[in-house]
Image (tube, rainbow, N blue to C red; front, side, top):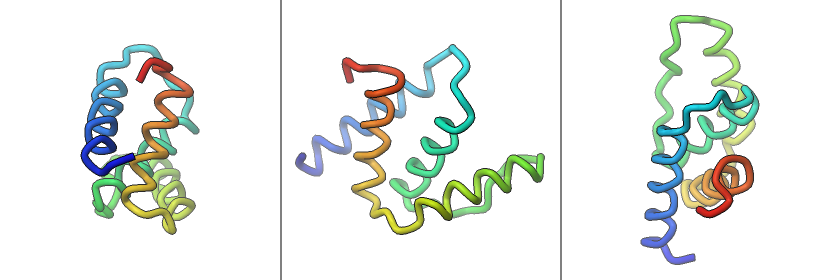
Length: 88
């Protein structure tokens, strides 16, 4: 997949997730969170006011730490396609 196409699909996948109204499983949300942060090279401290949520987010980032930005975008798109929007 070309870089431009990947960026377009990633942007569309993020839009789908942001507009999705049904509850999603916590493990799926954590994977999406980690892939999104890595894809955008944003490694700031998780911003939740709840320490336990911050710990789960930090753990998700640690588990995905060896993934490149492009691979994180692909994984994000694939996860959205398989779990939320097959037509993506």
